[in-house]
Structure formats: structure tokens, C-alpha cells
Image (cartoon, rainbow, N blue to C red; front, side, top):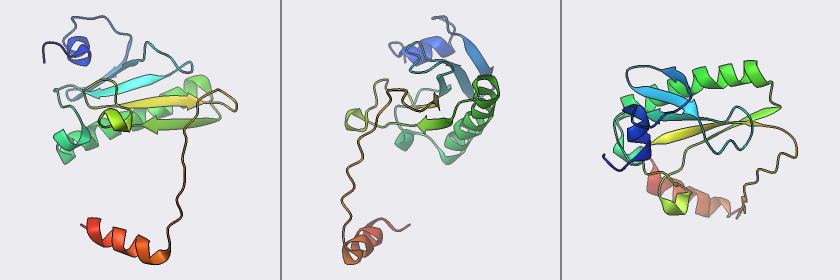
Length: 134
């Protein structure tokens, strides 16, 4: 897509600090660097969300995430690591191009995620599971 910043990075029209590349994926430093070593792993062909990629493409991206996560751990020795993939505005997606964040984490690094557990009863969990069972 001509107006997609990640497509422009993939095409070499915008510079990026690449850490890994193969035929389907590109991993590069996030310019926002939440913590040192924060990497974006993007699918090369344009697709907006997880729902727009094939299982094979999703697998290729996660294979790259696995490689990059190991390299980040080796280079930065973080206490933890968060892998984040967001879909749609309500899901916190800010760039409409399928990608994952590989984010090294440290105690008290200021990164927060609100997770208001609802703890529904077992009967409700069973009904919810029945609705999505594949």
C-alpha cells in the first residue's frame, strides 16, 4: 500500500535499522523504543490484521519472532519479554499493517497493561467456549 509506513520500510523507501530479514518477514528497531532492544517483526506483504493473513504467513512471522526474541535475550539479558500483536483500534493497533512487538522487559520499566479479570462462573465459561469452539 502506498501510504503504509511499514510497506515503505519493506520497500526501502524509508530507512530502518534492520535486525533480520527473510523472504516473508522483516524485523527492525521500533523508533519508539519502549525499552532498549524493542523490535518490530512485520509481514512483508501488506495485510492489516491477523484476520487478513494466512496461517502460513502468521507462522512465518512467529518463526521470525522466535529468532529475534532469542537474539534480544542474548544481547540485552532482560528479566522478561513481552510479545504483543494488536488488531484494530480497540485492540491497540496503531499501524494498520500486521506486525508483532518483541519487547524486552525489566522490573519497574513503566510498561503497564490493565487486565480487569471478570472471573465468570464455570457455566458462563462453558457457554463462551461453545460459541468459539473450532
